[in-house]
Length: 133
View 1 (cartoon, rainbow, N blue to C red):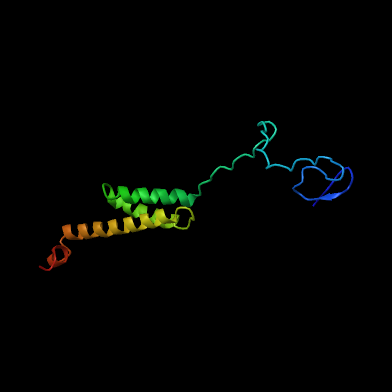
View 2 (cartoon, helix red, strand yellow; view 1 turned 90 degrees about the vertical axis):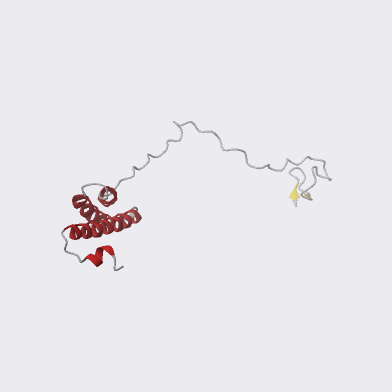
């Protein structure tokens, strides 16, 4: 129910005029319009905080790249470096998955390299490297 501003009569919400005095009711409020445009000078934006990389993130990336490159050259240097750097980088929160990948890749590469060196030095039995059959 809405009340007439002129005579005080209570009327239904749907009636456009007061039946007692004939005063027109104001139109119902419409949906809210779009927000007002504010120029840049009126509403300054807060400065964005730069993303800071911790030493653990850098260590993880270094370890992963070293692990992958160690398969192609300088494996005696790059695979242990990749393993150590990935283990250090595992403590970080953002790049933990990459650190795990670096650890696995470098560990498998080190095992392959150790097996290859032992095979070249003939320190492993023939059946161990070539299979039983």
